[in-house]
Length: 143
Image (tube, rainbow, N blue to C red; front, side, top):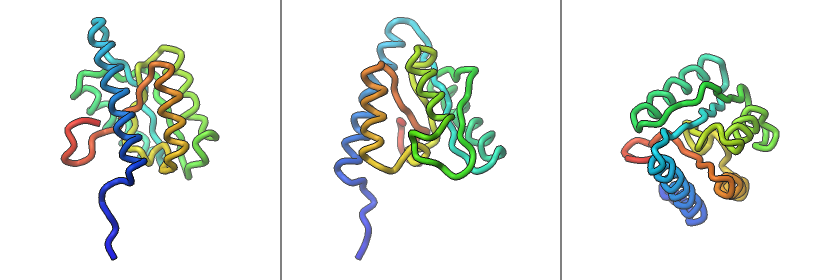
């Protein structure tokens, strides 16, 4: 028996919603003559890994013409449930208060692999005009 490499339909739908939100919000910002601001969020097991991930995020943001905020957000160590992560909570508050258009992380598992929790995050951000973005996977043109 083989495991499918394609995401489950629910996960694929959530990714489509997330990407559509990101494209809408960034297009609006650019259309108003603003540079897209992103707050970086990292979940890392060590400070060294945290620095490496922040460097990757900063490089990608520069590549696509986004500006990384001066404030960065991280949780270090084993990941607690999403609601209990102080770094992610701070990043959410920062962005939803208008200091950033979105949060940029390395990959979706940085946040959660639980589709229901992920759907709540996407909805929470969308109604507040904030997007969630990731570094592109190998072979993917947009995140």
